[in-house]
Each structure stands twice: as C-alpha cells, then as structure tokens.
Image (cartoon, rainbow, N blue to C red; front, side):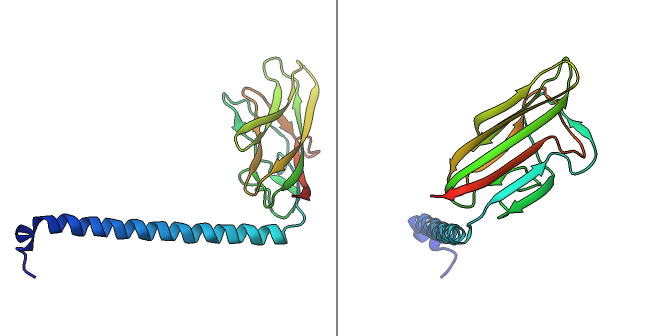
Length: 187
C-alpha cells in the first residue's frame, strides 16, 4: 500500500481512526468489567471469611500533647492501636472501612485541658455525613466528652472522626482520647 492511499480514499483515514477508538473503548470496557467482577468476588470472599471485627486506638502513639486548633474540620488519626481484629481500622489514615455488611457499634472519647477560646470537639463521620458529635467547652481544668452510635454499614463504608474546627484535643500516656468500634452482627 502506497502513501497515496489517503488522497485516493480520504474517508478511509477517518474510518480507521474511528475503528481504533472503538477497539480501545471496547478494551477499556472489558477491563472495567473484569475489574468489577474481581471486586465482587473479593467482596464475596471477605464477607464469607470475616466473622470478627473490632478495633481500639488512642490519639497519640506516645507522650503527651494537644492536637489543634485548626481553622477547618480536620480528620483525626488515632495512632496507638491496642487491637485491630480484622484489620478494618487504618492507623495511617484514621479510617475504618467496613469489610462486611452488618451492624457496627462505635464509641469515641475526647479530652482537653480547659481553654477560654478553644473547646474540644470531634464528629463521627460516615461516608462524608456528620452522624454524632462529642463536644465540651470549659475555661479551665481538664474536661472530656464522649459519644457512641450503632450504624448499619455496607461493605466499603468509611467511618472516621473529624476534629471540630478551632478545637483542641488532648492525649497522653493515660490515653484519654480514644476511638473504638466493633461488628455486632452481619446482615
């Protein structure tokens, strides 16, 4: 085939390009289908094999300190993991990701030294939605707040704590600020 085929059949060039794009798109669709099937298979495997899920962690890995204040809501990462059965809690991101559909119970405790301008507060977030808050504001001395909730979670739902804007949270070797959760039962 000579280089002059483009001038002899100008519409053929567009047809070849269109065919190449179609093949590429079909290949991408097939790859996505295979990836989705693999995901569903992995979800099925995890829902069959995961029977126990529980974690408990405190805010600081070691030492004593205050986190915040920040001028925006900030995700909290609880670094000292006491237990992480099922490995659903990530101590690098602070995210709990549900490995199986079921009812889960979460509790969180936050502590702070009193401050006139800065309260202590944390919000439990499920998939970006504000669920419950623990909030305390006193001018002096130590204060704490806590809350808990039972949630129906689907596989892959994300739960984490977000520090309330302009607040401070205290933790030390006594582990005043904690985040815990466990699977009650599968559904």
